[in-house]
Image 1: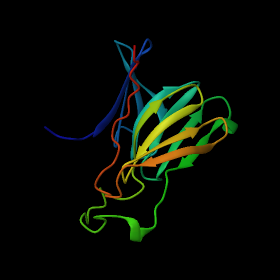
Image 2: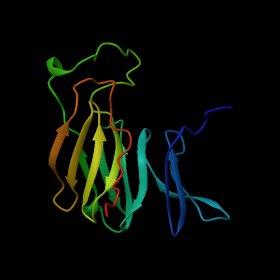
Image 3: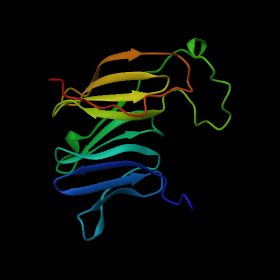
Amino acid sequence: MLNKLHINSIHCDANGMYVSGLRTGGMLHFNGKTVLMSAELPPGTHNARPFRDGVLFNDSEANALRYCGRQTETEDRAMRVPEYPEETLVNADLDSSGIARPGFARGMCVLSDSVVAGGSSPSTVTLYDLAKNRRLLSVNLTMDVRNAIHGLALWPYE
């Protein structure tokens, strides 16, 4: 009944289940028997998941998609989500809580070992090149800040 952890991300693979949320302190790993801290994360993260030799996540409070490698700091990446001029935004004044705000990073899909699609508000999907630490392109669907791309998935077509 209490929302103490505010879980917002679950990722499963052959190594187990990874869980994170606004107040979990990081990405937790459940191997079927125990729960351990896999990676510490900043507050306000979404979509955390293991990636290559580190962790990939949306740093929603910093308005950025981030990758942090375990082996070397030179692999750390932080790419800001697209920003738009305030006068082009729609309904920016309707939410005094700050939850519906431009730049809110949420939603992610890994496309390859170096390219990731990320979502943000207002309704924008951006392709990021982790190897080059840059944005490749962005597509905006609406300028209404109440709309963010919460989930991205890659479905195989036959």
